[in-house]
Length: 251
Image (tube, rainbow, N blue to C red; front, side, top):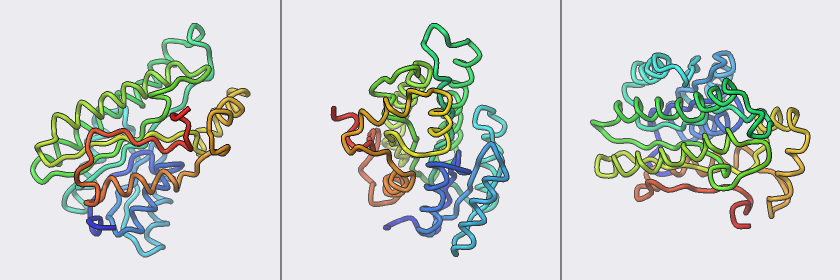
């Protein structure tokens, strides 16, 4: 794909699920990938897999809800690879599977600390690092930013905020060589979704019913869209929200 070879790209939440699939796809495309995850061991395992396939990657532990950790993550990418050209922000946590009036304040705060505050911190410091030479950012959001689902109010709210952050940031930096887009996956078979379905017994049936393709997505299907958005082939795309959802938001 045009314009990805040797680019230095950070992937948060890169130890599993969509983040892992994105990291592997970017490594295959010739990028120099910094795989970041709260679980540093998982991040290092994904980086090792990229290396074994002939790519270049490093794995590090990072907590996107902690500003000093985000700064250190980006610093590691720059220190190792000389610059930061792009980022995919895929780190996230699921809902607790409760009705809105049952959600505890701590549960609300944890969801927003990662899904929205963490996304803000990543975008803030990624942009700061890219100001001189430009770059591209892809935020992994969710179709839950556009449509609701049962027992997930705190998650839907965090993802709606994430989509707003993407649009606002894209406008701020549209003339500064920095593109910012969002990818909105539908129900995708990741460890996070599987865990959420274990907590909420009705979630699997509810999600399956709203996908016209009558199946869940695979992380690799989301990764392809992210890879394109980070490439030079997407040079006129910014501020957009791309739903990769099997038709979910068309209903």
